[in-house]
Length: 251
Image 1 (cartoon, rainbow, N blue to C red):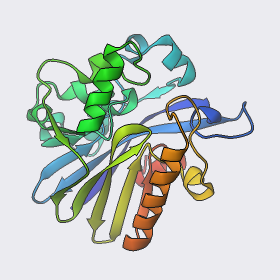
Image 2 (cartoon, one colour):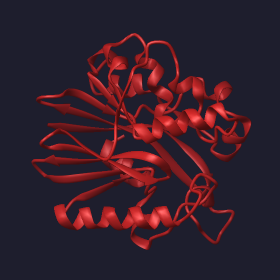
Image 3 (tube, one colour):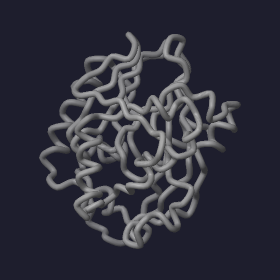
Image 4 (tube, one colour):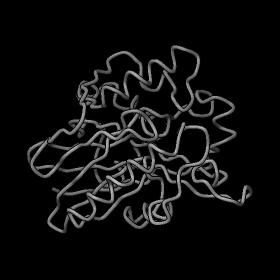
């Protein structure tokens, strides 16, 4: 197995839109990323797809004001930089369906991978409920609901292979998929957006903004992640840690 961490540009926003902090004027760079897994049995598995190429017209004015996007790199271009094309992808895993994770899904509209998009059942239900009841939040219906896309759902823990396990978290959204990947160098745990940054993890700083309704879900999930880290002596990969993603992607 081989992992490729893909840098897909960034959001620049007030830090308290992501992490609770005292300085309301402090800014933060928030990377957009994806992970390509070359797996000997599963083929090429892609975790997340980045922003929509139509973010300027497709995202709401409130979203673009809160989370400005000064840099956009398409999943197509990021894959191309490491010698892969869209058609090389066999399966897609979406951590969740927010705009900056599911937005690049449409690039795969004419590929076989679009028929094998894995998401949690709770997440899929929540996304449709929110967009169909006029409370879309960070969901953009056209980014994840279009002709040809076929979702496969999981609930709880799912072992795709003996060295690749998915687990559903109930933080940030009701069904965000994290990953536990066992490599020759050790175990990697991918939190997705349940933990945005290393600072949030180490200082136990809950998320800011309006997405998380309570901090209780964050602390409950954080406890579980730290237990896994200790159990597997794992390296933790966070959802939007700028320095970490730049380092891992060698961008």
